Image (cartoon, rainbow over the protein chains, first blue to last red):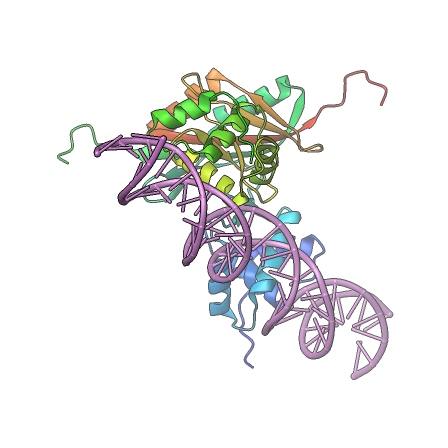
Length: 149
Length: 149
DNA sequence: ATTGCAAATGATAATCTTTCTCATTAATAC
DNA sequence: GTATTAATGAGAAAGATTATCATTTGCAAT
């Protein structure tokens, strides 16, 4: 039983700051998440976590992403395909959105302050305060203006 | 075995136009959908369909909404809660979007040409043609400026 | 109207993702 | 170090959706 050693990740610190018990498994999952800049689903997260420490079960990964989401550490996303995907929650800077390539399924992030403001406005004019925006656009790559095929 | 009789709905006509076989069940489901201006899930659709003709199975409802979606007759929506919800696809006029009341879960539709245009623009500038927009904003009703509750 | 045939349907099993159960283990305060 | 309380692992259970397969039905040609 060899304990894997690695430094506390930014997310692990956040976990502590929120008063959550920092178990070995949570430390591992936080480490893996801090190390990811994509949008893994639970299955994929589990794969990556097991690489770091095999003594972890998929049930714990499910429990941990839920806990992290409830504490504003993670954001759940739905890009279709039937499974939830996760990414580290935005910090102070504005929200970001996702463009999904219709053919490859690739996810491309983008920000747009004008869009932030417009949505804020629309919602306010309907008498609401904006809580969350769930936006993803599906697009198909344009043929290059003078490509050859 | 009494055959229920009702006129062909606009969606039933659409179904025929697309070259889909117009079975009794599909005619019933199309009728129910044409009659709905909300966003029912499959379970709810099944309930409404059975009212019109009890000789219908939930499997057929699942098959039919999928078929209709693949043929651009229906749009699938995800408002959270684990089940897909459906609505009649937009015609020529612009897309519409959804505001979800954070407290009641109520879904409020809205249109906004400025938003249509901005999204179109953003996507184009990233080198893509816009295929679909999936947008829902979650909001919380503002306290009335001088209410008493 | 009848026939023929591919496609649709009903009933239920299977699948897939996610949550729950409960005995065991581990983190934190003392 | 010990106690206490919460977290974990493994698998069962739940909930939504899709697949299976024998039977039925819509529809085109007769």
